[in-house]
Image 1: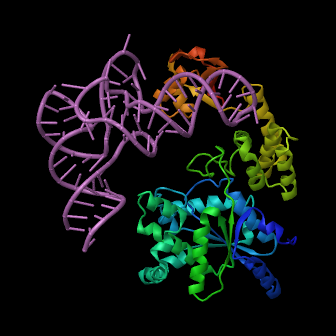
Image 2: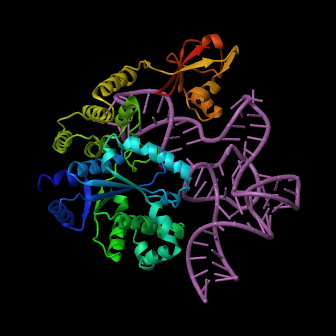
Length: 400
RNA sequence: GGGAGUGUGCCCGAGUGGUUAAAGGGGACGGGCUGUAAACCCGUUGGCUCUGCCUACGUUGGUUCGAAUCCAAUCGCUCCCA
């Protein structure tokens, strides 16, 4: 494999059709024009997760090689809902919400990508124009059997779960984006393979050159089993504080380490390969490998200093079981007796007072490290002390 | 349009008139052990002013001393026929 191609193929699973990318690159070089690299995104969530870093890094690699990332903001399709990997449809979003999410996304993307050197397009631009006639034209060339080849449709269909016609049409809309922007290459996760291929079909029907597609391994979440996603709550966000980024990474199962190293660490490919090999050979202790991984990720999105600090704080809190230094404070009310469950709900993110009571019963609540057993405590017993819920949530109680 | 099913707690799923806030499993959370890993053990998993009260088995209404369980209507979903 030639050196200039290698970074472009990193972490790719499928690169289709065979040889097409190389051909495209050669043509582009000869014509001295950049390739248009499409990445679609649904502006539905709030945080950009570490899972995104895989494709964003790939865009950065293309950018490095002189090509042009074209980001498609699915402001139209967000109102339809992509069924990828989901068993149910997702809610539609308002335009205002979509615009707000988009701005937030770009800010987070800029941690990986030079967002001043990308093209940003909204698919409402052409999909609004498409109209019923255009939609029917798109749909005329696809069959139900073709659509049902898509894995998650297939599963739902055979499992007797509903698939709305709207969802069924989604891949056509997304594929049409490729026609509209003249994509040369489209990248995405492995779950997007079908959609990316639809883009090729529609480009062919439109009589234009067909894009190459490239799918990428999906990063597993902190649970080590399911795909990292915001809705599953198993994610590390690019916006996470250093301590959270470090801590969440430390909580992943050992088995997830190789994948995280490859997909998320941001370390050079050879370095990653070496570390994974050392780990597999038992030359590296798993804990050490995980600390190094947590450090690498934290440093990647913050700084070496911030990562150092996060590592220190982590050691103090979880190895030495000390109360962390920077913890939020909460002002106690004037009442002489304090209802502890209310305190937990108000300041430690407990969902309900009933839940708080259960936590107290279960020994999860501590005051300056001592297990709390009372539901109500006199105010004086709380002032100036640190209330703790579980292993990682603390609040210092003060007077106003 | 006709017919047959089905709708239970975060998810799956049992329950077909009376200790049912609802078996069991998964997930999650918490405690122990530990490397905030895995495995393992234990506990919790509707709300609250908590030895009690309130709300809950798609929705609405009804039968009954009493319903998730029976009836009616209604909404959603699946399958079959057209």
